[in-house]
Length: 346
Image 1 (cartoon, rainbow, N blue to C red):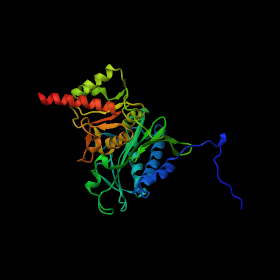
Image 2: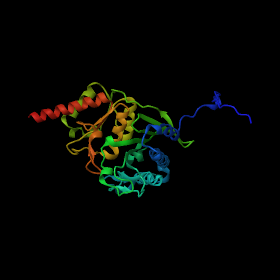
Image 3: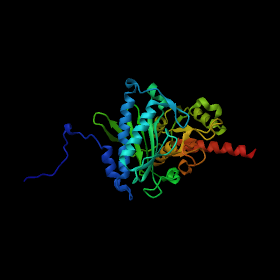
């Protein structure tokens, strides 16, 4: 029997299509001394659900699945039909994968016990961020955090399994449904982005080793509520205007964060006199993006301290968020602290 060694073809008809998400996950498995495939399976399950949600999002206008569902979630926000669909898809995928024992979702008041007795992980997820933008065809997203449970496997889920600070995350990521669909994630070893190729049904590595610029000239904040801002924040925003920075605010957290991660900038959802604790959720929004930001060389604070060090005390706890290029975040934080010190001196 004759054999020959394989050599890659250099023919123009044999161009490389790139590295798929599945292959990349397999290559990177050796980065985890404790992993035996479970975390990789969770990431695959999330990617599968994301493909389904991407399909539903793309046909929402034709399938009558846009618009309000007629109910409100635990946040008091009106649920969109795609909110409900996304929540079902991600929860079902994580249930069937068998590696996750519990899910914390923006759309559910309580922790969802998946009854996977051998599940070692807990997932916190915002199934569809920015869903109010669905009907006007603006980018939306999914945000997720993954934690290892701390109580014995097979025992009932306990609060300490859920109420973990962000520095305990083993992985986090987001999916952006926009002009192209992207999945970006970190496992604590840098940040990598994958773009969905619909004709092949695969995510391909398109943004390896993503790094946030140290500084930037974009600020993202809803200035419609500026009369409610803290004095220090008002000063910082005026400084941005004096430097002729670009104001960019989509209203979808994932989309705003993603743009600033690539181009350099700061995203701010501050505490206000109306919402002194902020409005973004710590467990399944701020923690995930803070982990990604730090792994990409960025920074994330609540205006006074590191997001990942906050110890959660409630399931749907809210927090202010200053996130993006580190020089911009530090400067904004300095104005807030200086303003607070002046108030304390009076």
